[in-house]
Length: 303
Ligand SMILES: C[S@@+](CC[C@H](N)C(=O)[O-])C[C@H]1O[C@@H](n2cnc3c(N)ncnc32)[C@H](O)[C@@H]1O
Image: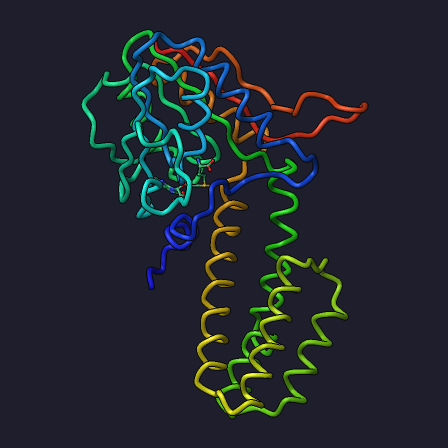
């Protein structure tokens, strides 16, 4: 199994990665933003989506302008046409995996627009921003949506990260399950680790703690039924998956920018010859009197 947590994630038929939980229609709202952007591009325009994952942005861009010629690149071993069960309109997109945004395999001035949704900030800006600027033609557009430290994407992810770290810590549930199914620890020790986790201060969710506890119950039942091999396999798979999820969220948390960092990012783009048209927090359109911060929006035009 690959060690890259994003490769594991995208090959498991996940369509999105950074959907906030605060409001029900955040994915739709952010897609509308990309549709509007695509509507402003000339027909037949060449677009490069950086860190594309399973093609969320290309799908939204095509919905706004089906004539666009879109290439999506990602460092992970992506191939949405193979790994998504319903790739739909993505059949017209060229996807390239194992491509680092810090070293793009394209000539200078190749694209009319470069986009990124919660992607470019995962790479080293000193190397990725010059690459993004290089491949845009003069007069071409750049549109980034980036993680904000206080966003409705990042704050819940921080909480999930703590929950996962608690389960994976030394002496935690995952380690004790592995030792128990291997016959090295007693059930009482596994049980105690579970109680410690439930008594802890960290928020627990059905999606993380609930799933791991369900897996523990299944593994214990398999062991009691004399199916020790299957119990060990289940324990090992659960551990690998949880580690991969933890590593993804660690990267997400590290990629999030505060106002100072974001200001520096915008300035770097200016130094690279781009006019910054929009550099601001992006909130979901207000519904019932509340706004939800989703990220930083950066829109530029190359001189
Ligand atoms: C949060 S996901 C976003 C994916 C997609 N844009 C979306 O919104 O669904 C971050 C992506 O950045 C990719 N990534 C991280 N570092 C990268 C790099 N140096 N070069 C290319 N892709 C990178 C990861 O593989 C992952 O697919």
